[in-house]
Amino acid sequence: AQKITQTQPGMFVQEKEAVTLDCTYDTSDPSYGLFWYKQPSSGEMIFLIYQGSYDQQNATEGRYSLNFQKARKSANLVISASQLGDSAMYFCAMRGVNQAGTALIFGKGTTLSVSS
Amino acid sequence: NAGVTQTPKFQVLKTGQSMTLQCAQDMNHEYMSWYRQDPGMGLRLIHYSVGAGITDQGEVPNGYNVSRSTTEDFPLRLLSAAPSQTSVYFCASSKDWVLRGANVLTFGAGSRLTVL
Image (cartoon, rainbow over all chains, first blue to last red; front, side):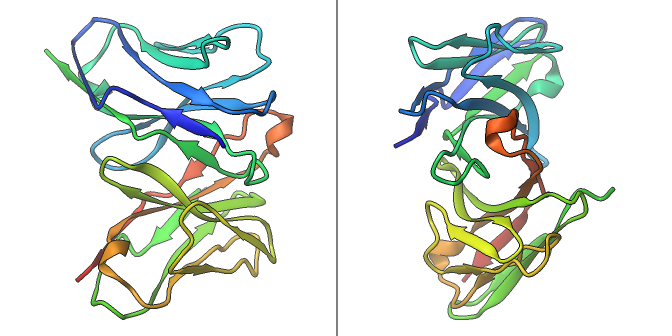
């Protein structure tokens, strides 16, 4: 069965600092995709970054990068130069094999708080 | 484009009442899904659809029905509401088939349901 584990319920960081949000996954499928979503206090789900299992390089999107360590089955999100607007819940997710790839399996999330 | 539209945004029900959460997308996406979000649980898949006329169960389908008569609409029905169904519900849609690349889910704004 597929599983996403986020072990940090909450993280605290100061503005302009970098922060790493941890995510480990479990799957027996050799082809998989990993996602990070942001959920601010307003509630919407915002896609941040994607990493495919066969991608040779770690994904980057602006201040977001994904530290993909396949052997360790980890896909940590790195946010460089944190901003107050980064305060939100962050979810790691994996494409669901049993759902014909139409849906995602989510972790429980990490709440990030950025202070000035 | 409106994206994924969910209605209503808020609803209070009494135990035993029935209701339908509406979801519509105007992006011609084939794949649609429903999730519920509970504190400390992340998002869990309720039902999903790979196209008009085709639906299937996710992780937590009990107490919910869905149908997909058109590509655009994917309503979620609560047949007899229970307090355990108090949650925030998200509808999502996607365009790409998982094996062809990033299956980026686009989410609706969410519907907050309280069952008394």
